Figure 1: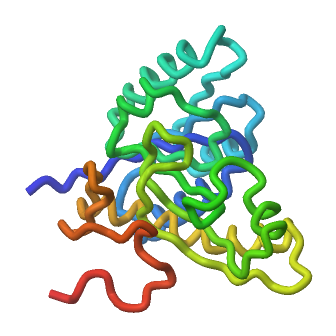
Figure 2: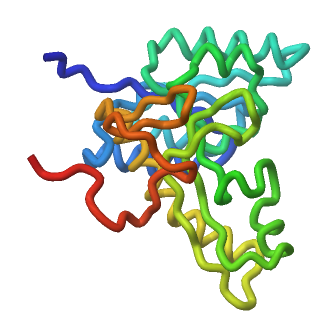
Figure 3: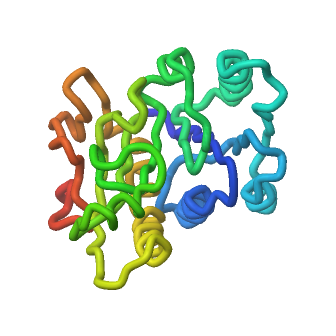
Length: 225
């Protein structure tokens, strides 16, 4: 039986707080995979320094150096593939990926989005939730498909909207849960328990509901052997 660790590549564009949560989870053993590289499309992304300080290889593929999205994505994919990743993790990567890129990494490309998808794909999610008068907001970890923020959910974490909440206060509480559910979802993948098919996401060969696993967990996902 192979004991090789799942190889993880993370893509960021800025501070990379979710990347940092994943680095800490990998260091503590909460994530059993190995983060083999961190990529950014911005050479000034602060998260690159965090990754380097943790001894992780970093790469910059500056989107401004390319004439179009297709050529940028082709170079990015080639550089990522040089690390032979099992899973590519988007952690605040602020680029819309082309169909060719998404198809190349189908079933091994994961993202986190700060809303309870399918509500509020795209930007300004907290502002939109507040303007709509929603009683809860949250975050979703999902597999990436060709539809923007439309891939099937793996885990969702709801957060109650409080009276007097601003976009910032709501975002801060959602981010706390993001840092919990992303390592959790990545570890499920590292354990070989997640599969995506035409119906959605299967966990331990059981189809998850449209919103994925509800977090915090109400009961153990896997019973003790």
